[in-house]
Length: 112
Length: 113
Image (cartoon, rainbow over all chains, first blue to last red; front, side, top):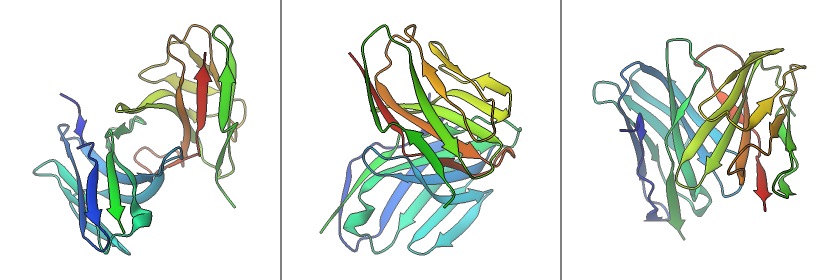
């Protein structure tokens, strides 16, 4: 079983829709959680960084962490064609390790 | 503008040749990382360095080597011992405190034939 599971998609939605992207994990020691957006043949861009449980909002993006369920989500409101990309989740424990664990990414297509 | 640069963007090599990928950052970050990205496999850690003159193997270090002589630079050499070197290589950096945000460069696509 992988430490982090992420549905590869592709997920196709119409422009303006609310998008929900999710990752589940098995290591209860994970404390720091990140979401990245990666356009084709480009490096990942950090979108959201959260720690512990709860919600964090930044513009059209909301990151949610549910540690009891070992589940994190990224919501995108009013999705745009420019949001079409692969979204990666990443997480690390508090043990002082420098090893970030990444999901395999979900490909999102927002249709105009 | 602060950021991470990787060069070149595309690199082509013949099998049996060593090749060095460049990574430079001007973010004043202590920690730097090299990842390999293959379709459907996500990011896999090759090497990381927490401080100058120190580095550790990641999950797939075989066939790769690195150096960290300067804080700003963390070059990766793909040696002829790496069995499947064709991949997208990503360099990243972070402040150096465990758990902090990690930022990525634009990547280098290496093709070995």
